[in-house]
Structure formats: structure tokens, C-alpha cells
Image (cartoon, one colour):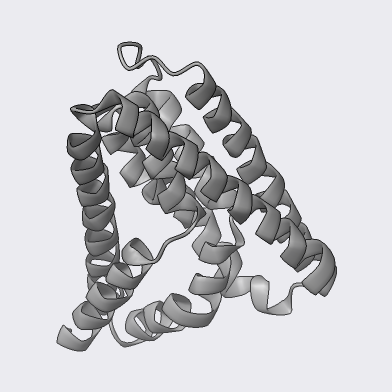
Length: 201
């Protein structure tokens, strides 16, 4: 069991620490709505990853090239939509008006994760084979891998939200600047995904 736990810890750390659209979204929401209301969004992969894992393991490897491009394009469009929403939050910034509900936060984050091609590729090429091998040997091995993976990844996301939220909470102007930076980063991620879907793929 130990090798599967170590694999889960390692891959979970990599998934949580690697900058990407989902992490950028968490940063954006922390700056716009405060860390307390954003904490729930860190658990979004538990909502979105079930269908992703099934699709990645059983479908993605046989997926036509055109459909793979469609995933990148759809993800890019959605990320650009989030960038536009972030821009409006920056433009109308009010540090005393943090109104987005926890329910909106987790469902937006889940949609962000579901429409990003990264998790599909990650589960089809890396985590999926390990998970299936563990299940083939014993269900407890597959479960231990999953617990280690998601426990590590979600813990890192929670730490990111709390640390950034505490650092920006005392300085409204700093928070607004970071919100603009996050808006730019989301725009870059969205444009890059469109580039991958339209040009590269």
C-alpha cells in the first residue's frame, strides 16, 4: 500500500503546486470575495473529477483529434469568460462588498476544472493507469491512492487560499492589484488554450 500512498502524495502535490487555470481561478476568487468564501472552491475537484476520471480512462485515449481540439477550445472560451468576470470585479472593486456565495464559488470552480483539458490528460496518462493497477491488485490500494492524491492536492489549494487571503486582507489596494494580475493570467491561460485547440491541435 505504501507505494500507492507515496504516488498519490507526489502526484497530488504536483497537481496542487503546478500553476494552472484552476489555481488561477482560486486566486481570483480569493482576491475578489475573501478567503473564507473561497475555501469551499478548493473542494471542486471532488465534484468535477468523477466524470473526468471515467472519460479519461475509458474514452480519451481513443478520442478523435477533432474532439480533443474541441476540449481545448471550450476550456479556453470558459477561461476567457472568467477573465472577463474577474476584470469587472477589478473595475468595480469594493473591499467591503464580498458578495459571492459559497455555492456559486464551488460550482464555478467545478465548471472551471471540468472544462479544462489538463485533468483529462493527467488522468489518462498519469494517474489513471496507477489507479487501475491498484484496483486490479486490491480495491484498498486504489482507494489509498485516491485519498492520498486528493488529500494532498486539496490541502495545498486550501493553504494557497488562506495564505493569499491573509496577506491581501490588510491591504485593499494590494488585493486590487493582485486581482488585476489574476485577470491577466486568466486571459493568457484562456488564449493559450484556444491556441492549442485551433492552431496546435
